[in-house]
Picture 1 (tube, rainbow, N blue to C red):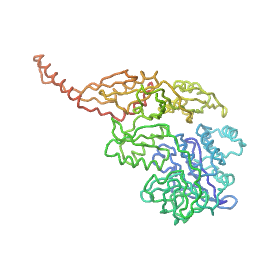
Picture 2 (cartoon, helix red, strand yellow):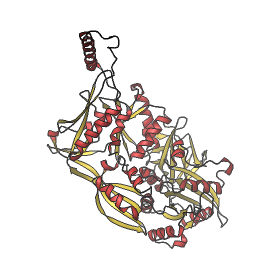
Picture 3 (tube, rainbow, N blue to C red):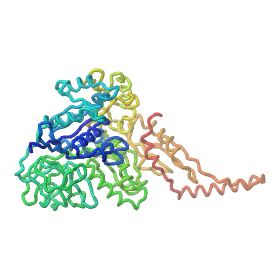
Picture 4 (cartoon, helix red, strand yellow):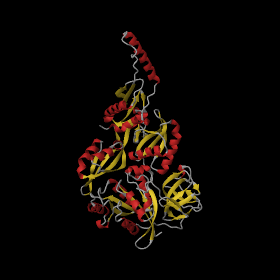
Length: 598
C-alpha cells in the first residue's frame, strides 16, 4: 500500500486539466502516443465538442519514480464547471491528494477557489501547478504569488508546466509521489468499498466505480450494498487502464470497478458502501450529502408513446449522474412527463442533449423554474416547484423565494458593469475582497430566479469573458410574488405560467405576449393570447387567421354576393375555433428565458 497514490485534478473550466491528464497517461506509458486522441478521459462526444469535462473518470497508471520504485497512481479527472460540483465532491472522497491546476494567463478564478476549499475540507494534500506557461500572454510569476498567498506556500515550490508541449510534466508525477500520502486502511478488516460513480452497461448491468477503503475484494466473492441491501455475485472486478481491464482482486487503497450485473438502477446508489456478504462490515463509510437541485423544468416526450422510453432514459442517466432528480407529472398542455431538478442551467442543457443523442428521443423541455416555499393561511408550509401548483391567492399568507450568495471574481476594471448587472437583478451587495492584486471578489445575495436564466451569459459579455461565478444556497425569503398565467384561446397553458415579482408582472406579461405572437404559428382561425396576473388580464394580442381568398371568383358583381361569401367563411372560422387546437412550438416554452430587454 505504501506505493499507491490516489489523487485527482481540480481546476476551473478550460484551465487545461484534461490535457494534463493526457500528458500523464503518455508519460507513464498507460496510453501509447500513437493511440492518442485529444481529451483521452473525456469519452462522451458532448465533452469533446464543448471542451469541458462532464463526468469524473478514473484511470490507473504505473510509474517508476526517480528513487527506482514503481508506484501505482490512481488518477480521477474531475469536471470544472460549477454545475458539476457534485461530481468533484464525490471524486475527492476517493483520494488523498489533489493537483490544483491554474492557467498562467487567467490566474485564480471562482471555481478554482470553490474546488480548492472543497479539497481542503476533505483534508487532501494540495499539489499546486501553473499550466500554459508556453503562451505569450502567460504571467507565471504573478500567478505563483497569488497561489502562494492563498495556500501559504513559497512561490518557488509551485510547479510550472505546459501540458500542451509536455514541458516539466514529469515533475508533476514526482511531486505526487513525494507529497501525496499513501492510503490508510487495513487489508485484513471486513471489506468496505465506497461507490464514487457508476454507469450502466447493457451486458454487465450497473458498473460501480469503487475505492476500496478496507479489506479485499476478489472476483468470486459475494457482495452486498449496505444501504439498499441488494446482494449480488459480481460478473467481473477490474481496473481502468484507461479501458476497463478485469483483475483477480482489489485490495485496500485501490481504485477500480465492479460489474454487478444489477439491472435495476435503484439497487446501486452512488455514495453507498459495498461489503462482503460472508463477512459484512459493522458500519457503512460516510457517504455523500444528497445534492440539492436548484433549477426545475418539465421534460415531456414529443410523442406520447415514448413516455416509458423517457422514464428508462432518465433512470439510466441518473445512475450516471446522481445529481439529476426527477418525478412524474402531468400537464394539461403537454400530457404525461416528468418534473426534473438540475444543479444549474448548463447541467439542464447537457441532460437535454444526452437524452436526445444517447437515447434517440424527441423531448420538449419547459422553461426552468425554481422551488418556492408557500406559507398558507392555515399555518402549513408547502414547497412549490412549478407555478401550476401554486394555491389560490386567497389561501396564501406569503410566498418565500430562494436566495443565493454569489461570489464573482473579476479583474478590477469590471467592478462597475458587474455592480450594475447584479443590482438590476435585485441583488444586495455584501462587500468586496481582494484575493490577489488586480482581482476583486464581489459578494452578493441575489434571488435564484434572477440568475438561472441568462445571468452568467450577461456576466461573461460585460467582462469580456474574464469574470467567473460561484454560488451557494442561502435561505428562503418572503417577497411580493404572484403567478403570471398565459391563456391561449381562453385556455391556461400551465407550462408557460411563471411566478414573478409583483412590480415586474405587467412588463413581463407584455413582453411574453409580444414574443408568443411571433412564435405561435397562424391557424385557420383567430387565436387570442392573454397574460393574466392577480385575477385580471394585463395584456392581449391576436394571432391573425390564415384566410383563403373566397372573393377570388367574384369579378365585380353585386356586393351582397360578396358579403354572403364572407359571412359563410366567418361562420366556418367560428365553428373551427370551438373545436380547433393550437399547436404550441417548443420555442414558445423556451421564450420565457429570453424575455430580458433585447
